[in-house]
Length: 55
Image (tube, rainbow, N blue to C red):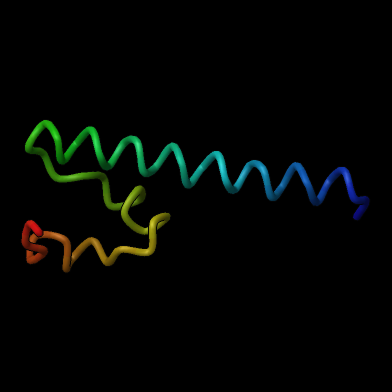
């Protein structure tokens, strides 16, 4: 693997995480449950999400 390929993988991963955060945030803002895939990308257990309280 070349340095360019590893950087693309790293940047692609960052873009995926930011996209998941934006999507989950929009869902919560709209009083909907975020997609399970987005929550998993963010390291949140989808089954535990409904039990999270507001701070």
